[in-house]
Image 1 (cartoon, rainbow over the protein chains, first blue to last red):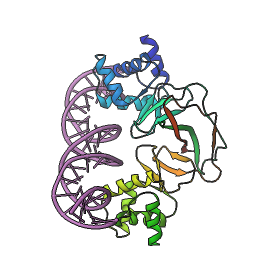
Image 2 (image 1 turned 180 degrees about the vertical axis):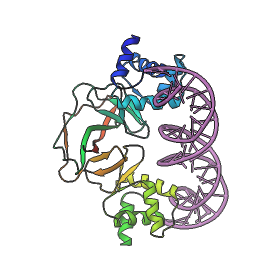
Image 3 (image 1 turned 90 degrees about the vertical axis):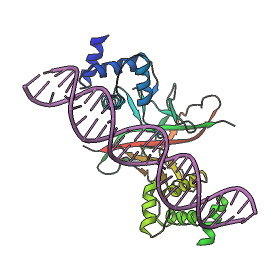
Image 4 (image 1 turned 120 degrees about the vertical axis):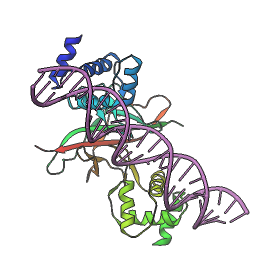
Length: 133
Length: 133
DNA sequence: TTCACTGCAAATGATTTGCAAAGCA
DNA sequence: TGCTTTGCAAATCATTTGCAGTGAA
């Protein structure tokens, strides 16, 4: 619903503009998946929405700071994950593709202390995959 | 020593050319660190060696397949780690810089099974860091 | 000799930026 | 109205590629 999306953006301190509401809707309507700025731009074109690619880039980064999507900095492009719960990723080296590890998540212990003046912002576990055989 | 470097390359099935021997020496003489192709290229220029940037790219990838360096695909550039032992990384989000987690390494359990047709090529733990405060 | 490797410069692909026009508060 | 956002095209940055010349076996 429209008003709800507006509230979501406001809660994230993001001013609700037409473009941002559109993008939020596209993201939520498509279910959990991994987006690149370009793939989302294509989705927008396909569904008849006119947006500039630069706006998609900007908006995804804004959404990432507002925890509406999760930025995964793996491989040679920017992936944005619509699943904002705590989870980790498979990474297909051959294709550069990223997807969620389903079900129970891997667990990390024996974590190091961060260097002086730094703090831990998060932990990512990347399980690299290749074709079996 | 020259002959030893040659043997190292041969063992990795990499034909020892002048450029590759030079790069291997640069990598080993500098101690453990994290390189980008460009940073290594600069090191080469500084030490008076003439190499093309494209060759540095090629060579680092060849060395990565031969396990002479480790390719770390985090952030928006290619990092190559001269530490080939099993270890994980800190990632400074603000600067895009990568460095080794020193000492005892984090440990991952509860690993997921790979999807059908795939096998696990490796696990990377990325500890994201930000300025404390 | 033969095939792999290198250098160079141009091509590519992802992402960012500058700036004028349009939109939200 | 005043500050933010958008769109567009150009700029940037990292990386790859095509190809002619060079080198290793």
